[in-house]
Figure 1 (cartoon, one colour):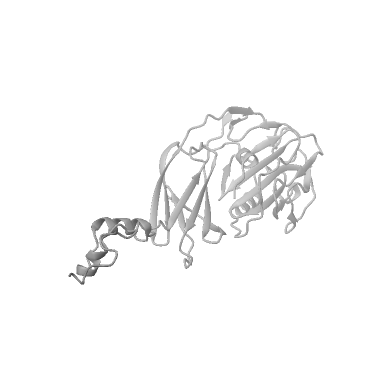
Figure 2 (cartoon, one colour):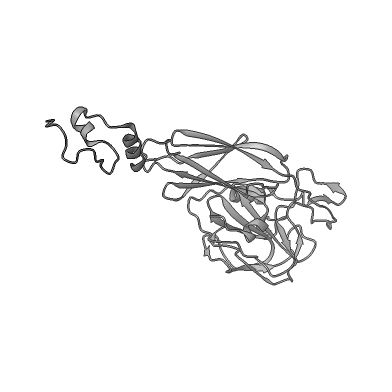
Length: 312
């Protein structure tokens, strides 16, 4: 009598292998091993990508603001990622734990075409192609009265305006879409090229939106921020006219020109929709209107996209 025979004899267990075979030689049939592996979680797959990048819009045009959002899976990361586009490197701000964002501004003075966004972070580097499409901007002819020349800016106002546009505040003050700063119709869009008194202004494009608001009509902050610039004609703002500049944080600033009255002072914090002044025709202006310029990382971009979509 064979004393090694299992009492269940030729029966098979739930894994479909011969119990007698296990007792005799401890070897499992291959179909059992395959079945067992299929029931276990996969832990040795491809490595998780630590650097995840999202770019919007996917197909930008000249004048658009390109948002680059970066997610890092490494909770121990202590350094901000870096973002470069062409030969320029742009500031990167943390907007959530291990989540970062950079803005790349584009302007009408650039050439359209394909370029690469280079993102570095957590020991990794990613290069993403981005094609910036062309855009046709209209041409406008402006005749200014004597004393209203666009070339007559004082060094003082130029220095103050340049320093304001270069502000990089770590905090983000805005939230959601930007509001329209005046109820008047838009009389001049962003990007228009100009002739002044018959002379083409090289390197010039209309850096903002003009609202044909009535003289004395309200001008409000399009988004929350800190008043970082107040300039007047009496101080030497000969071209800008009476001016208010709001820092929205993280390289995003608004400037409002040709005001008749200013209702804020430098250092004030304003909310979206808060009164900051009234429409006028001070400085290099042909009539009452509001000029609203929106700058991202020192470059003038089209404010319309900030009114129609939310930038986080």
